Image (cartoon, rainbow, N blue to C red; front, side):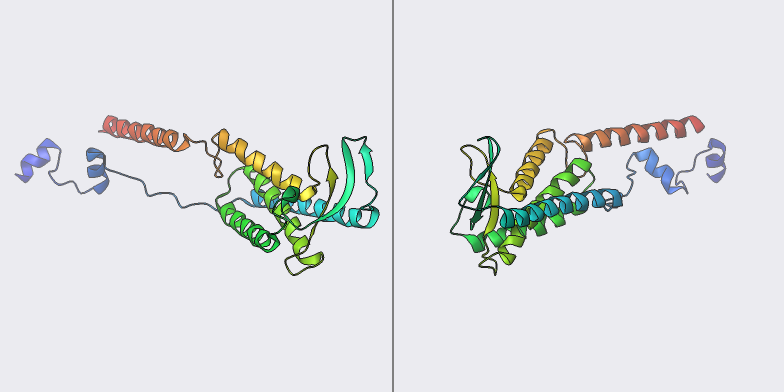
Length: 221
């Protein structure tokens, strides 16, 4: 029997485990370890957050010292006015009687956003999350440094449009982030940079590569 096997050129029990896997088609590559966000994306997120936060706090400090709540100033006629107010509620004067709840929500949003950013692989998502963190942190800062303080501080608002509640730069950041996230979701772009059909496409590409390897092995034999 050994002579017959040697003459036939094929062993009943191949010594190469990979050969058995190729013949049965059950070979699977181990899943690639999840990569951390690149330094470039982290720098982009942090940079956007710092710019948004700095603009918000800088404009609030200017408005508090330069504007008189009793005398609004027109910037572009009646389209844009500067009207200094102190808002105990959320963006656009929502929930003015739930200051502590809003403080907790803002803190949770910041922590959750930082946690989600671990899967970041997309520049648009980095900008969106940076705007969200910068805006939320800007208003959260007011809760602790503005009177009456202790998490119940009133947020400084000073931008006013016709038929629209007074708002600030932090509100603009949060709303812009929400719109950008909605757009990315509509386009099917995930936080990892892949589109909604990306997994299926990757599997098809992997299948084609595997088939190519099998054909090459067959040709060699």
